[in-house]
Image 1 (cartoon, each protein chain N blue to C red):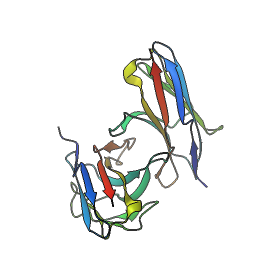
Image 2 (cartoon, rainbow over the protein chains, first blue to last red):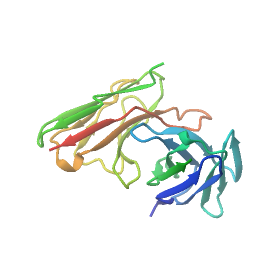
Image 3 (cartoon, chains in turn orange, red):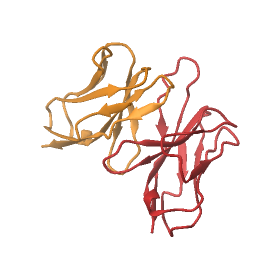
Image 4 (cartoon, chains in turn green, orange):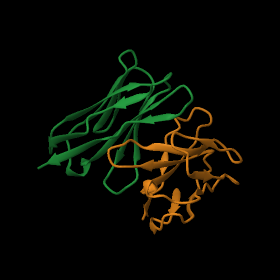
Length: 109
Length: 115
């Protein structure tokens, strides 16, 4: 079956770095997405990886290892506004998105 | 720039009633989707449309129907609502043509409570 696993909740300190991991099992693979979702709001796109390696975009970076079925989202210089849920989603061979349940990130001062 | 507009934003509905959630996009995206989001679960795809005039079933289509008469509109209908359909519903669109990544753009969501 197809599955996306990510931790349910993480806590980090303002100004620090946090890494949110995601492992995936999909029927075929056409890329991996990360979305951010603030409480009560819609998800918004953060990153897309289809090749192995690190993609950096400001304070946020996303890494992919296709051989390990693994990705992570790295958030640097954490700010209080980064408190949100982070959703990992894999794109399967039929170009359908398989979603994880999301990781709720709590930032403490 | 409106992006995707959903209506209503919130609705309380009696079981057995018919309900249509509206979704309109102004980005001329070819693909549109309806998801439901429940606590502790990932987004689950209800129905999708890859282009105007075509629709397909997602992971949880039972009890729901959709239509795609034109590019912009993608309404979701609950023919006879049941309490298990209490959820937050998100409409989304994407441009899956050419070299685009197909990232999703979401509406603000419709919170539906069925009593």
